[in-house]
Image 1: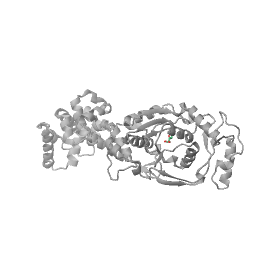
Image 2: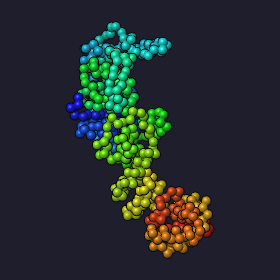
Image 3: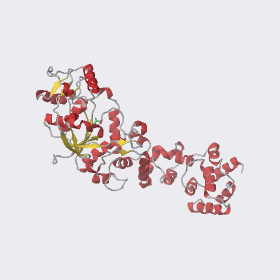
Image 4: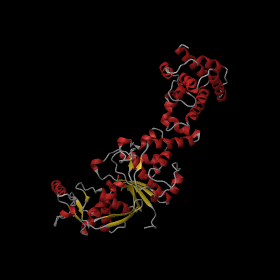
Length: 463
Ligand code: GLU
């Protein structure tokens, strides 16, 4: 097994959008393949027709592409491989390891209820009929299990054990002729030469069943790696849509950088033995290992994601960031020139956590604040200094240093504090609650605008 070329797969069911948990599975599988110079395959597990969502496949592809997790092959769709599953099912029928299931849903419910009444786990194999009709299309086909103890090595969880009660007869092919996940993925992983099955914890209880099936099919099993759940912010239960498991493409819409998402996802349950939280993709390819994926759930924290994204934004050369920022400017920014926008971007680069914040952080560079906006910021301040500020700034060349010196001098001569004087100037010139560092903001806004806005605010306040 070890000398086979490494091949991993991401095998989502197209039932909706991809969120953090799903895409992290894809990333880990991609990293394992990439590190070994192997292949990463996208397989669409679309055999549950009742849960199928049409746009989902394209959505999955767009999400992978955005993050640069390009498959070497795929999408391979299970719905297009029904004949293959049928052939393999027939092999099991021929070897006496599968049988037509003629039980009705009512029969099943009755058996389940009586097991419950007896406080015993329900096992279908205990009720396996002694005689069954030949299997025909339209009939569900069930696996004939051979219960036993299992011990196996999981690449993440280590050595695992399960008793015979974990092995049961299960459906291979449904009455609609589609295979179950339990059957189809085993066949596909085998035929596609998958060396590492990397998937979420929710499949762990089924592994003994899968081991039994590998044996019945006489096929070698791939290495198995179980990824613990991504947990919600409280760290108690699996991350759900309710606690912020967003569509991955929403992060794109909000102007997160794909490289930041990658770094964040990689460290959601993996570390290299240090506290490092920021990784470039090349470093991840070198350092990632399944053996260092933690065995307990990883807590999703969107504040950490913002922090990681802010880091990548700060590190990015301004010209590059400028290109990415294009869709995120406030409407009026279109009317100003590139130089000015770059200056503004340079001012907020330090504090941007994601690019969609650009609008709220910069609108006042591109349009005058309204009276309400100005008064909204000045109402509480004792705005008594504006005329002195105007007098001083009229003399300024509006370089950063000159503005800084003058305003610091005013602190002295007016005998006041930055919290008072600077908030007053900020409110009067921006009308905004948050704005970048004051002296550089004034310098970028320019003398004409700053003086005009100060005068207007002063008039509004009647000072
Ligand atoms: N179709 C399964 C899912 O969407 C894939 C599990 C696996 O990777 O084997 O969760």
